[in-house]
Image (cartoon, rainbow, N blue to C red; front, top):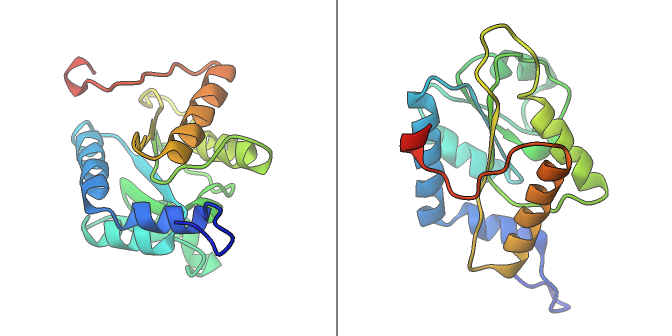
Length: 175
Protein backbone atom coordinates (compact mmCIF):
# COMPACT_ATOMS: atom_id res chain seq x y z
CA UNK A 1 0.00 0.00 0.00
CA UNK A 2 3.07 2.22 -0.19
CA UNK A 3 3.98 4.43 -3.12
CA UNK A 4 7.44 4.60 -4.74
CA UNK A 5 8.60 7.05 -2.08
CA UNK A 6 7.62 4.69 0.73
CA UNK A 7 4.57 6.76 1.73
CA UNK A 8 1.09 5.37 2.22
CA UNK A 9 -0.90 5.54 -1.02
CA UNK A 10 -4.55 6.19 -0.11
CA UNK A 11 -5.59 4.91 -3.55
CA UNK A 12 -3.78 1.62 -2.96
CA UNK A 13 -5.23 1.43 0.53
CA UNK A 14 -8.78 1.83 -0.82
CA UNK A 15 -8.13 -0.80 -3.50
CA UNK A 16 -6.74 -3.27 -0.94
CA UNK A 17 -9.71 -2.73 1.37
CA UNK A 18 -12.17 -3.11 -1.52
CA UNK A 19 -10.64 -6.47 -2.45
CA UNK A 20 -10.78 -7.87 1.10
CA UNK A 21 -13.52 -10.52 1.08
CA UNK A 22 -13.79 -10.73 4.89
CA UNK A 23 -14.34 -6.98 5.00
CA UNK A 24 -16.87 -7.16 2.17
CA UNK A 25 -18.71 -9.93 4.03
CA UNK A 26 -19.05 -7.61 7.03
CA UNK A 27 -20.29 -4.84 4.74
CA UNK A 28 -22.81 -7.26 3.23
CA UNK A 29 -24.03 -8.16 6.72
CA UNK A 30 -24.61 -4.47 7.50
CA UNK A 31 -26.47 -4.03 4.21
CA UNK A 32 -28.61 -7.12 4.79
CA UNK A 33 -29.54 -6.06 8.34
CA UNK A 34 -30.47 -2.56 7.18
CA UNK A 35 -32.62 -3.84 4.31
CA UNK A 36 -34.38 -6.31 6.64
CA UNK A 37 -35.31 -3.32 8.78
CA UNK A 38 -36.88 -1.58 5.80
CA UNK A 39 -34.15 1.02 5.47
CA UNK A 40 -33.18 2.82 2.26
CA UNK A 41 -29.41 2.44 1.94
CA UNK A 42 -26.86 4.69 0.24
CA UNK A 43 -23.45 2.95 0.19
CA UNK A 44 -20.42 5.00 -0.92
CA UNK A 45 -16.89 3.88 -1.84
CA UNK A 46 -13.89 5.53 -3.44
CA UNK A 47 -13.56 2.80 -6.07
CA UNK A 48 -16.01 2.06 -8.88
CA UNK A 49 -14.79 -1.55 -8.94
CA UNK A 50 -15.75 -1.89 -5.28
CA UNK A 51 -19.31 -0.71 -5.76
CA UNK A 52 -19.70 -2.68 -9.00
CA UNK A 53 -18.64 -5.86 -7.15
CA UNK A 54 -21.07 -5.25 -4.29
CA UNK A 55 -23.81 -4.31 -6.76
CA UNK A 56 -23.41 -7.70 -8.50
CA UNK A 57 -23.91 -9.45 -5.16
CA UNK A 58 -27.13 -7.51 -4.50
CA UNK A 59 -29.74 -8.13 -7.20
CA UNK A 60 -32.13 -5.21 -7.52
CA UNK A 61 -29.58 -2.66 -6.30
CA UNK A 62 -28.42 0.25 -8.44
CA UNK A 63 -24.97 1.70 -8.99
CA UNK A 64 -23.76 5.20 -9.88
CA UNK A 65 -20.17 6.27 -10.58
CA UNK A 66 -18.19 8.50 -12.89
CA UNK A 67 -18.87 6.13 -15.80
CA UNK A 68 -22.62 6.53 -15.38
CA UNK A 69 -24.14 8.95 -17.86
CA UNK A 70 -25.33 12.14 -16.16
CA UNK A 71 -28.85 11.73 -17.52
CA UNK A 72 -29.08 8.22 -15.98
CA UNK A 73 -27.87 9.10 -12.49
CA UNK A 74 -31.10 10.44 -11.00
CA UNK A 75 -33.10 7.49 -12.33
CA UNK A 76 -30.61 5.06 -10.79
CA UNK A 77 -30.62 6.97 -7.52
CA UNK A 78 -34.37 6.50 -7.30
CA UNK A 79 -34.39 2.96 -8.67
CA UNK A 80 -33.82 0.83 -5.56
CA UNK A 81 -33.77 0.67 -1.78
CA UNK A 82 -30.02 -0.07 -2.11
CA UNK A 83 -27.90 2.40 -4.05
CA UNK A 84 -24.14 2.03 -4.47
CA UNK A 85 -22.25 5.14 -5.55
CA UNK A 86 -18.69 6.38 -5.82
CA UNK A 87 -17.83 9.02 -3.22
CA UNK A 88 -17.39 11.84 -5.73
CA UNK A 89 -20.71 11.21 -7.45
CA UNK A 90 -22.47 10.19 -4.25
CA UNK A 91 -21.75 13.45 -2.48
CA UNK A 92 -23.28 15.44 -5.34
CA UNK A 93 -26.53 17.24 -4.71
CA UNK A 94 -28.92 14.57 -5.96
CA UNK A 95 -32.15 14.72 -4.03
CA UNK A 96 -33.87 11.59 -2.76
CA UNK A 97 -35.66 12.33 0.48
CA UNK A 98 -36.31 8.75 1.59
CA UNK A 99 -32.62 7.82 1.93
CA UNK A 100 -32.13 7.08 5.63
CA UNK A 101 -28.92 5.04 5.84
CA UNK A 102 -25.41 5.91 4.70
CA UNK A 103 -22.62 3.34 4.67
CA UNK A 104 -19.15 4.74 4.02
CA UNK A 105 -17.38 1.69 2.59
CA UNK A 106 -13.88 3.17 2.47
CA UNK A 107 -12.22 5.53 4.96
CA UNK A 108 -11.20 9.14 4.54
CA UNK A 109 -10.25 11.83 7.02
CA UNK A 110 -12.59 14.67 7.96
CA UNK A 111 -10.23 17.52 7.21
CA UNK A 112 -10.18 20.28 4.59
CA UNK A 113 -12.07 19.21 1.44
CA UNK A 114 -12.87 15.77 2.90
CA UNK A 115 -14.94 17.36 5.66
CA UNK A 116 -17.12 18.85 2.94
CA UNK A 117 -17.45 15.45 1.24
CA UNK A 118 -18.47 13.92 4.58
CA UNK A 119 -20.99 16.71 5.21
CA UNK A 120 -22.46 16.35 1.71
CA UNK A 121 -22.62 12.55 1.99
CA UNK A 122 -24.41 12.68 5.34
CA UNK A 123 -26.64 15.42 3.96
CA UNK A 124 -28.11 12.91 1.49
CA UNK A 125 -29.82 11.06 4.36
CA UNK A 126 -30.80 14.13 6.42
CA UNK A 127 -33.49 15.38 4.06
CA UNK A 128 -36.81 15.79 5.89
CA UNK A 129 -39.73 13.60 4.91
CA UNK A 130 -42.86 12.67 6.90
CA UNK A 131 -42.59 9.20 8.43
CA UNK A 132 -38.94 8.81 7.57
CA UNK A 133 -36.77 6.62 9.83
CA UNK A 134 -34.04 8.27 11.92
CA UNK A 135 -30.85 8.58 9.85
CA UNK A 136 -28.02 6.10 10.41
CA UNK A 137 -24.41 6.36 9.24
CA UNK A 138 -22.11 3.35 9.29
CA UNK A 139 -18.33 3.74 9.25
CA UNK A 140 -16.32 0.57 8.69
CA UNK A 141 -13.35 0.63 11.08
CA UNK A 142 -10.33 -1.46 10.10
CA UNK A 143 -8.68 -1.82 13.52
CA UNK A 144 -5.48 -3.43 12.27
CA UNK A 145 -4.54 -0.53 9.96
CA UNK A 146 -3.47 2.57 11.89
CA UNK A 147 -4.14 5.02 9.06
CA UNK A 148 -7.69 3.64 8.70
CA UNK A 149 -8.28 4.00 12.43
CA UNK A 150 -7.09 7.60 12.29
CA UNK A 151 -9.35 8.46 9.35
CA UNK A 152 -12.44 6.83 10.85
CA UNK A 153 -11.82 8.42 14.25
CA UNK A 154 -11.59 11.83 12.54
CA UNK A 155 -15.03 11.16 10.99
CA UNK A 156 -16.35 10.16 14.41
CA UNK A 157 -15.01 13.40 15.91
CA UNK A 158 -16.56 15.38 13.07
CA UNK A 159 -19.87 13.61 13.73
CA UNK A 160 -19.73 14.50 17.42
CA UNK A 161 -18.79 18.09 16.55
CA UNK A 162 -21.94 18.28 14.46
CA UNK A 163 -24.03 16.94 17.34
CA UNK A 164 -24.62 13.45 15.96
CA UNK A 165 -24.86 10.55 18.37
CA UNK A 166 -21.91 8.16 17.86
CA UNK A 167 -22.21 4.49 18.78
CA UNK A 168 -18.94 2.59 18.66
CA UNK A 169 -20.29 -0.94 18.87
CA UNK A 170 -23.47 -1.92 17.12
CA UNK A 171 -25.94 -4.31 18.72
CA UNK A 172 -28.58 -5.17 16.13
CA UNK A 173 -30.85 -6.68 18.77
CA UNK A 174 -31.11 -3.39 20.64
CA UNK A 175 -32.29 -1.41 17.61
